[in-house]
Length: 168
Ligand SMILES: [Fe+2]
Ligand SMILES: [Fe+2]
Image (cartoon, rainbow, N blue to C red; front, side, top):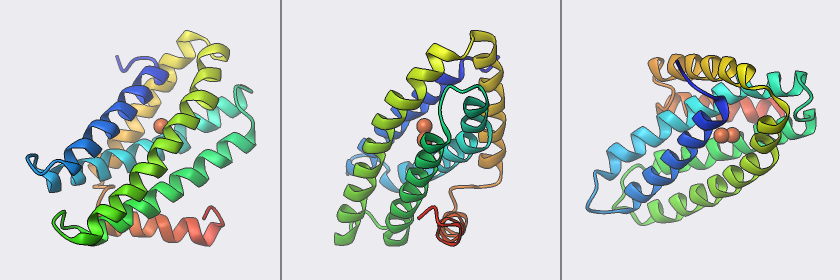
């Protein structure tokens, strides 16, 4: 049993925030926290785009503008994540600036997604469908993780694709 897609998405959002705190904290394994954030962030965004946004659109819980805006913000997040991964070393001066940018992009996207996508999903989509969507979301998320989706080369590929398709 995977659970309600809204709860699963919210749990990931809180996980991103916790990992960002660990990445800033010199007493934590910052590089490990960054690897984990990269993987779960990309897996989450890809699973939302492939399994959640299209279904919410078909059910008229959100319009295509909201879904496209969400995809644009995912691409921006991946671009900021790529900069952090490119610096890589938390002790480098540029790391803090890159991390600050990623933190801002993420805070903005999580706020907007929770207000304008998850709230309508809760109201407009019946419980059994939210459970079904939860399963599909977790399956795609796991498939992404199994394919090492947070690897810098994959993140670079996603950013390049977003540039080519006009999402960035
Ligand atoms: Fe999300
Ligand atoms: Fe998202």
